[in-house]
Structure formats: C-alpha cells, structure tokens
Length: 474
Image 1 (cartoon, rainbow, N blue to C red):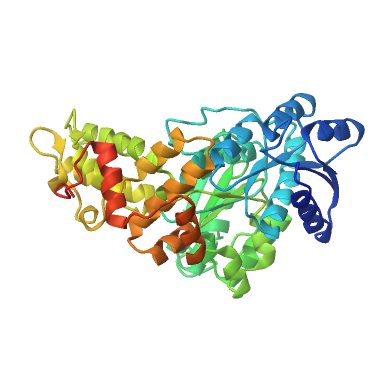
Image 2: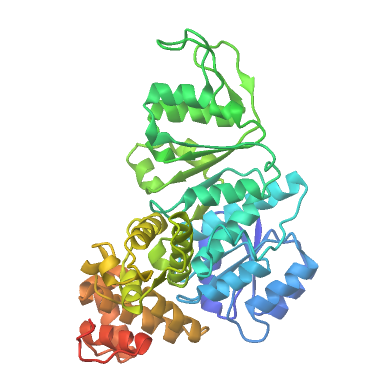
C-alpha cells in the first residue's frame, strides 16, 4: 500500500513517514500541494494524507482538485486542535476522514485501514458515495461540527456492506445512526431489526438471534425463525454488543464468518445475507485486554467505527434540540405556543447531560408539563437537576467559536474559560480539557486568562443575556 504524505513542514512529514513505515506501509512525500498533484499524475497511490493548512495550495484546495480528477482516491486530512470545522468542510467536499493533532499511531492506522476497506466495499457494490449535505436533517440535528462529521461517515459507509461499530455514551443516538445507515443503503427496502443484547439471558438470546426448532429446549412448543433470518437481505442492529458472553461471542463469530445460521436444536445450517451493525457504550479495546471480548470478533464487527459525540460536545445543537422537543411535547399534550424564559434557558444550557439527548428529551417533556398557565417554562418548571449546576451556557462557547471560525486562539481560549467556569478548579478544568495542569497554566498565561471562575461565569452570562455583574441574577 503506497501512501502520499503532503505537508509543507519537513519535520512533521518525516515523523509521520517513519511512523507509517514502521507499521509496514510504503510512503512517498510532497512538500506542497503542487508537488502532490505532480506526483499523483505520475504514480498510482492508494491514499493521500494531507495537512489542511499549507502555503500555496492548501489541503482543502488540493482535495478539491483530487476529487475532480480522481474521485476514487481516498484522502485523510490533518487538522490542528480546535479546527474541526475545517475538517468537516473537507469531509463534505469528499475527504474520507480527518485526524486532529495530536494523534497516536493507532489512530492513524485505524483510519488508513478503514479507508481501504471502504474503498473496496464501494467498488464491490458498484456505487459511488454521493454528497448529500442535508443528510436526514429532520431526524438528527447536526449543526455542530462533531455531529456533522458523524453523519457524513454514516452516509458514506451506508452505501457499502461493511460491518459498522457505533460507539458513544448512553443516550447519544446510536440507534438512530444505525437506522440512517440502513435507510441510505441498498438494503433499505428490507427489514431493519434491532435488539439490545443486554435485555435477555444467554439461552433466550441465542434463540432470539438464531431461532430454534420445536422441542429444542423447555418451552419451545413451536419452531421459530431468529432475528438474523428475519433480517435476511436487510440489517440487524446489536445494541450493547459488549454484554455478550464469551460463548455467544463465539457463535456470533461463526455466523459472521460462514454467513450461515443454525437454529437451536437444528442439524442443518441456513445461508443468510444480513448486514451487521453493532453498538457499545464501553471501551471495547479495554474489554479485549481484560479477556472479556474476543479480539477476532471485535475485528469482524469493527469494519468501520463511528463515534457519536456526547451532547456536551454539541453546543450548537442543544438549543435546536430543546426547541424541537418542546414542540413535540406541546403538540402531544395539546399545549400550543409553549415558550421558555431566558433565565430558564441559562440553566438548561448549563447542564452537562450525562444521559445525553435522551435525558434532554425527558427533561423537555417535564418542562412542558409544568409550564405555567401562560405557557411559559420558567425556572420553577425546571427539573431539580438543573438547579444544582453552575450557570455557564454551552451555546455561548459554540457561538463565540463560530464568530472566531478559523482562529485557533479564539476557540482555544473560549474552551479554556468555559472549562474553568464549569468546573471551578484548575485541576478539574485541565482534566476536562484532556491536558496537564502545567499546560493549562501556560495557556492561561498565553491568553491572559487571570479571572477567577466566578468572574468568568458572570462575564459570559452578562455578555449573553445583558445581565449585570452584581451576582443577583446568578
């Protein structure tokens, strides 16, 4: 496999080349977009990895040129910390995926392997991915760059038969992503069947997945088909796949390898044509290291991984989702024209949502139910969980990042200030940002962040809502 590395900084280009060569890949290098174009015209590459920010022809411009001349050539773009918007723009143009600095060797190797698997799969089904920027907007809000990138991946992999592993916290919308993949696939006219693997004991789960014949176990008074058979030519979605026992994992692996199922108690197998999508809210690699999940099965189900971001990383989407849920429940409970006060919004936007979108939906239903006679959701109508959180709206960070689009300093400063205001302690803020305490202090000095968390919180609230800095409204 030959990979072209494009970066105008020689040291970064060389370090990446050595990393990939040690992993068994062949590499060539280009110091500019122009040199990359020249090399691609003369030689056949399997993949291009390019930095976005380069002098002369930028990574985005290079990508546009490559997509016009060589649509099948996968491109992975590298972007700096805090510039995910640029990476999403690149994916909309046609990049396969992006890497945010700093990244690990395993990060890039996983994306390289996925890019080639997707390339082969698209060729096998005889189709090309199509750019649809309005990917099911009525079903999933994707104003935030993180969610937009997730949906672009879902759309691309939908047009293949690759097994997909969807990861993310509970309540982020993994089942909806699985449905999107099915509905954008060539299997959309056939069944989409979903099951939560944690909901049934092992013996019943085996029967549920693979079926059974009459008399195969106590209570099996009739023969029945299993979900894999019911989903033939369609898609089966296994949620919480990490909860499968080791014996069930072995049986699932056999089905995926042989493309055959055997009903419980039956002697003859039956061939099936079913696409598998799995989901987990656990660290699957950690489970493998502990011997709780088979590595051979993991690599079978993880043809391509899609991570669904938590709601706390989707600040641009929060208010849109809230309005959508309020509208839904207002109609359900025949309470038209429900609105929410600014004071209540501040609390709603401040909450970290450990239960993610599902929790926001539940809270919205409660708020509509307890809105006052004038149809206004005020602070006294909010669930008590909101009132325990410091009021630092997530949406403010998203709005200011949008204003400072393209400015790493603007995005990074706002992220740091928000983390300090949200946690109240430097140590906790550093942990939330994923950096060391010393690094955080250095960046605070760099951006002249000398305010106390309380002062930061007051300043941001005053800026957003026009409040005074006297603390009364807090």
